[in-house]
Image 1 (cartoon, rainbow, N blue to C red):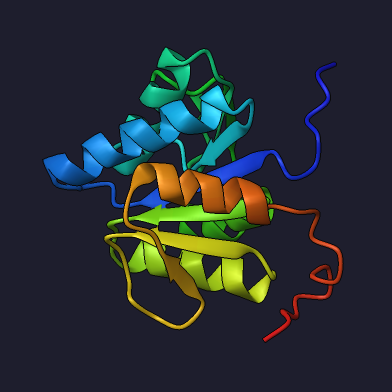
Image 2: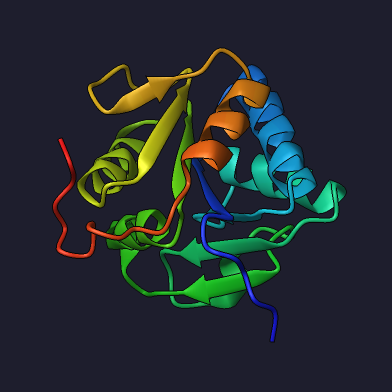
Length: 166
């Protein structure tokens, strides 16, 4: 069994229907995460999720997709480990919980819910062209976002009770 060191699971969250610039950014983020030896965790479907997973796979990385439906076959073709939940949007909490830090790219209300779960769980949330709200640390590039995520990713000690340190 492969051991994933704590602090090495980076969640990429974002729109299922994203513009080309956001998809290119997501692909770059995925490549950088894999290049750093981290695991990419996402919602496993299309848009930003697929672009990030594609980038990670191109760089030889491992990808985990936490799916809203009940079939692992719903995952995009770049997901190594599809986890079917049957939970619909409620699965967003599991995406946040299973990442040591989150990078939000673009996105709508589903992404906003993942951001909220990340903040509630005490995770660092880095934003690239996404919601400008308290708790989201803006980054100017994919490189800066991944660097911040890797530096700030840590075991979620103290966040197990659902309270963050704000």
